[in-house]
Image (cartoon, rainbow, N blue to C red; front, side):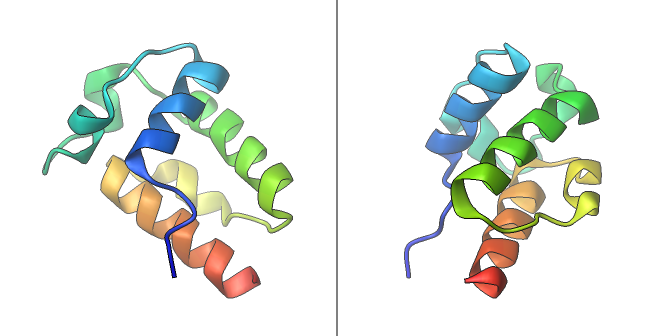
Length: 84
């Protein structure tokens, strides 16, 4: 099964919901953190809201506490898969 959220899609959603342009390759870099891109929990809440609307599932609230894009992508993909 193809993951629901890719780094490319995450970059698009961050731009649309948090107003911050991020290169998907930078998000994918090991050790990357949302802090270094200037993305806070409020910005991630916008991304989560959009994903919940698109997929009709609830993303766990702790997804916005993940400090790395890798952890966030894994949490979202897991939640969507479990809700499918």
